[in-house]
View 1 (cartoon, rainbow, N blue to C red):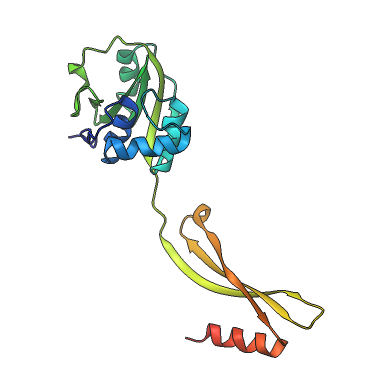
View 2 (tube, rainbow, N blue to C red):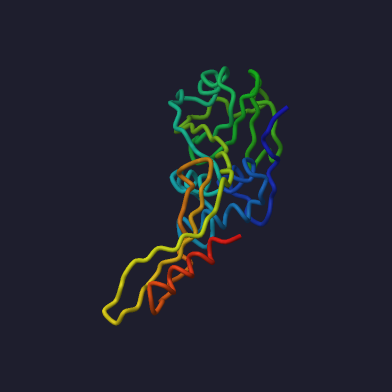
Length: 201
């Protein structure tokens, strides 16, 4: 049993969008649009590896470089004991591979459906790069709170307050602060009353 998706073919039938489709289940057209945002090209045909990996990242996957063997067969032998999904770059082409309990599956824009790698006629192709792709863990929201902070007292007597939303997730790198806006008060008392009302349930 494999976790690779069949290629969800749209108008774009090239190998780069197809590999992203195999990972995500999205159509090749959707995947091509993500690549287009990165490389600035309207038509997505040949794709540079760095642009493909950036597109995979934007679609929620981390990519880890693996030292390949010189051929596809040799690389698959090296990966046979390391379960996971891989993007394999051969000369002028990208392939999605999954190793699952010593079984190896293969899929690209030609096969369209995952198939046992042993059935491939491409095992002697030269391998340029191998990247393990890992679906990024989705963060879980822990809390969101509104913060009002006095930032400046002006000569005219106004009190200026910055209002932000502080969002905390279980994965720290996703934490963020969104600026909601600025509020100006005539007196400190007005500011104190505003903060008191804001924090009431």
